[in-house]
Length: 271
Length: 317
Image 1 (tube, rainbow over the protein chains, first blue to last red):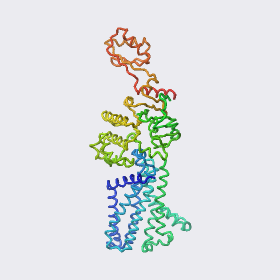
Image 2: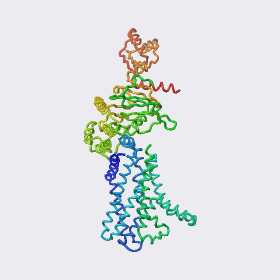
Image 3: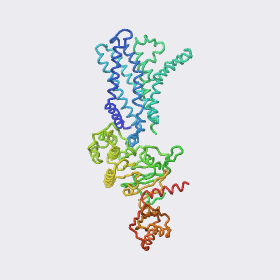
Image 4: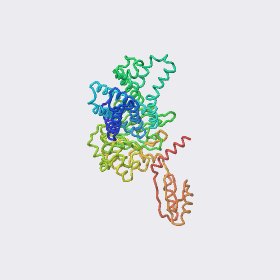
């Protein structure tokens, strides 16, 4: 593998997103949402203004879990199928570049754009709030930012995978929406349904492991379990065993969620 | 297959027993082809004849179902092919580039991928006549300008082998002339070129050799003249008699047994075997019918091409 070739493709993808102001737009969305949630998140409880980092992060997690997968899927769904459909893929592949280098370059360039928007968008909020936050709170917020980046990477990896499999852009966009529905809305309902139907008698032990099959859930666990106050508040401690809630373990699971779809995409795209 | 010129010992492109199947469809059906260094080689055929599929296999874009292809000393698809690709230029049919980049940025992107010097780009844009548009976005380019940019892209890194798929698509006559002038220059530098075109008349004056492809096979291979002779295609003779002479000439020709005589305006157009040409002319001179003009037309590449296609259809039935 020639890293140089990967870098050239990644560079083009990244600068394309900078130039068309995609990065700026997404960063602004994150900043605005984070600020609104930080200041008005407690409005229902009758308080306005920044309360605590725990509540802010918990609210942000609920938002980000919908938003980031959607943004990542929209960003990546046409990475390969778009080039193929427009007719520019053959020319690219006639260059001294392997299919794997092209795929990896595309992924890394898009991932860099998404990571940059996420870190810039939420980072700006951290700077604004920095005077009101303790070092410990900043540490948690930093963890939230990193896990958001990982969540984006995982869904971007899924998006690139389906862009390799799909025969045209329309199908790819449909699949992207279906993936979003499945992981963000349907998956938890299915688990919950299974628990209810079985009266909680079966599957209770494997339930936490099943949650690891969804990167969105891994993200939720990563953030919520790192906050003592939120954990007790949501009464989740009884559901999820502490030994699975190790941040390093969950991070590994997330990395697997990034690597596996990309690996499958590379296998499929090799032909 | 009619092989008129024996395969050269050393060739830059060597295609041997290549097949490509898509399910039941045999897109390329046992093609052998050798292209020599420095040659300008034409590949013609109907849409769906398998030209573009063959092109893509030579470039390693799609895998072969069977056979072997060597390009610039490397077997297509193997490790050494990456190095060969740096010396190959490719202009795809209906080239698609990136709308959001300028002409110069487009070339710079591909130059980086090919490890070609970036300072080559501006010169190449000048060469294809896009100098003034270098800093405009491709979005604003006309079809012809995109085609020129695609051509400039193919010339990056001073390739020694060029694959040009319908290169003059979308170009106006002036641009086509300039395009072939560039090809002539490249040929003098020893660049080997393989091109396809559906404008057969355009190719026939310009290629050294050509192959005619129908239904996934190469039916004929050689110089245009050699193919004409091999086909022994009939000639066209156009005769314009003086007023009132039309019927007399027609009777004369029918007397000679000319198989096909058509009337078009004040002209008679006949299609006859080459062997009959002199007999027709002598009979015209001997009769004292007034003849204003006679025009003899050699079979064109179109005729050769359709001649082979007809043969093919005949075999198929």
